[in-house]
Image: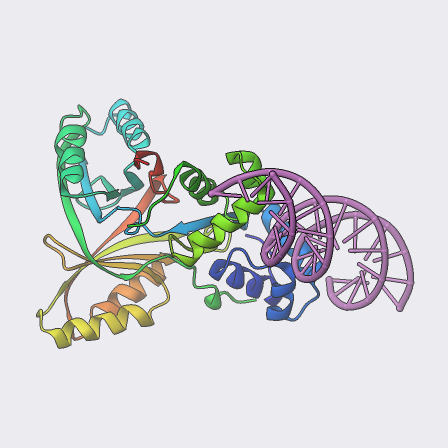
Length: 158
Length: 158
DNA sequence: ACTGAAACTTCTGACGT
DNA sequence: ACGTCAGAAGTTTCAGT
């Protein structure tokens, strides 16, 4: 864990909101000179507190109409089986996120898809037939209440 | 749905990977002049194909040790109840993402937390006691196989 | 539609406080 | 640790093809 002061936290919060903010804009926002913001930003990038910058694309506009969460139970929990499943997850582009979890399912996947047929394809032709997989349960996203995860930096004590 | 050519898709893919790419760098990557990249980028921002840019922060480095998925079943499905639940979700900063879903649970929440006590707090003191909520089931993330959701732009036909 | 050049803005390293 | 300044780099508008 890195030592951060109030300026760092403000800077992180600002860049979390808008990743293309210039050092000048940051300077105005947090009350520091632009060069200082530049230096701090570089330090935070160097220290991997900022792990990267990404453009956020509108999935719907690009034709990805569907988001699905898919719960997976593995056939066995052998290292070999786990490895094969991870390779599968890595290969399938529609799977955006994948986590192993405590609880009844072993894995939770988030997939973005063009339509119901693509979901059916993934579930029935990719996941189900795979030797590592025992059970698949998918849920379709009806509504997004909150997205674009921001860390609650305000809860960090200086 | 917007009309995009190969250059647009390359540009989007590049910015999805690195949101701070300069127009010059984009120009080199996709084989267009910098001024053209600037114009196209502005158009894509204007059309909301690019919905924003965000710095990605390393949660662990900042002391968020825990990610949890929380499944919620509402007490009743009255509009009033749903509204109250949405307000709750909006208020709680630890809840990064929230979706309403098909399937056995009504909502799926993703929360980032400092430790197990914070999770227990949210579940037992915030979610469970809320009048709209009937049932809460939480799962802790053991491992991230895939994160940093990128849209599979390669699957888009020009 | 694209390129290239010109005017403007931003970045970043050296220096002084 | 911070701000100022100046040269370098990047951005964007505009004319030209």
